[in-house]
Image 1: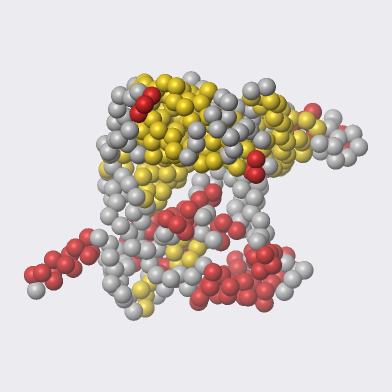
Image 2: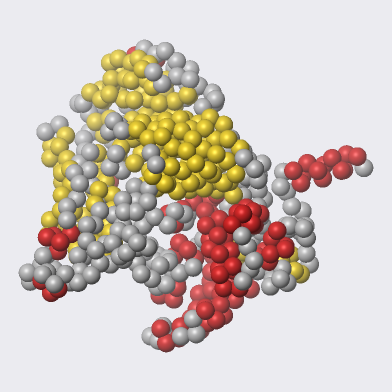
Length: 510
C-alpha cells in the first residue's frame, strides 16, 4: 500500500492524468468560475474540456466570458485561471509551432494560401472574418466543432445575408465536420515538469539590425511566473538591456513582457528539450521582430552557432563561432568534413572563436564543421551567390488611424541564394522605393514617404482624405521595393511590393 501511495504521488507530481480523472478539482478556480454556465458531467466541465488551444486564444475566450457573460473575474484571477486551464487544455509544442506567427498579434506578414480545393472551401467559408491560423489554433471534439455554427448565428444573426453568395448554413456544417477530423481534440495535454529558471546564452537575429548575442537570467516567482533580465549586443554596434516578467503555460509556452531600453516588448517562446526558442517584438509603429534561441549557460562545452553559415568558393571568410565554455583554439583544431575548406587561422576571442577560412572546392554542398573535442555544426558551401530575394514578397503597412490604431510598419530583408534556390542567408542589401504604375497620374510614391537603407518602412501619413492629392485619396498606395547588393564584383538586385493600407478598424475577430 505504501508503494502504491508513493507511485500515485509521483504520477500526480508529474502532471499525469489517468483516464477519466478530473482535470479540475471542485476547489479549483476553473471549476468555480466556469461551472456556473458549463455544467459538469462525469467530473468534466462541458465545453472547457472539449477544447485545446493556444494560451493566447484561451486568453481571448476568458476575456469574452467576462465581457459578454458577466463572469466575475479580476486581473489576478484571470492570470491564475489562464495558467490553470493551460495545464491540460493547451496545444502541444508541435501544434502550437504551426500557428506561432499569430502568437504576438504583431502585424505578421505571413500570407495564408489555401492548398487544394477542400482548403479553398474552408477559406471561402471561414477565412474572411478570421485568419486560418486562428482557426488552426484550436483542437476540438466533434460536438464542439459542430456548436461553432450555432455560436456564429448567436453572435451575428445577419451572417446569411453577409455570406449571401453561398449557402453558409449547410456549407459551414460540412467544413466544421471536416475540421473535426483534421483538428481533433484527441486527448488532454499532460503538462511536464519544466522550470526555465537559470542563466542563459541568447543568440538571435533581427532583420534590419543583424545578429545579436547576450545573456539572460530567469528567476522563478510564484505559480508559474518568472522574472527575466539580460543584455544583448548587436552586429550594428548597438546594445540593449531588458527586464520584465514571464509566464510558463502548460510547461512549454513561455510568454514574456519586458522593457528593452525602456521600450515595452512582448515575447512568445517555446521551452522544450532544455532550450528556449521564439520571438519578441517591439510596439507599433515599427513592430521590430527578433528571433532568438536561448541555451543553458551552464551546459556542457559546445559550439552553438556559426556566422555566416555559408562559404563561397574563392573567398576568404571570417567565421564567428559562438558557444558555451569554448576552449583555447588553433587552426588545426577546426575540421571541415564534406568540402575542401582550408583553415588559415583560428583563435578564441573572449566568448567566441574567430577563424579565417577559404573554400577551395567547387559546387554547392553541405559540409560539417567540427571543433576538436566539441560538437559539429552544418555549413553550406557554394560556388557563388546566384540571386537574392526580398522577404516579405508583399509587405503590408498601415497608416496612423488614431491613438488606438497606431501606424504599422514593415521590415524587409534580402536573402541570398545559390543555384537551385539553395538558401545561403541574409545579406546587407540597400533598399529603395519606386513607383508601381497602376493608373494614369499615379502618385503613390510621393505620399508614402521613404524606406530606410536597411529595409525598415514606417508610414508617415494619418488616415484621411488628402485634398491636394490626385483623386483626393488617402496616404495609401502600392509601390515597388528594390534591393541592391554587391559582392566580389557582382551586382545583385531583387524586387518586392509594398502595400500601404488604411488602419484595421475591424480588428481580429475575438
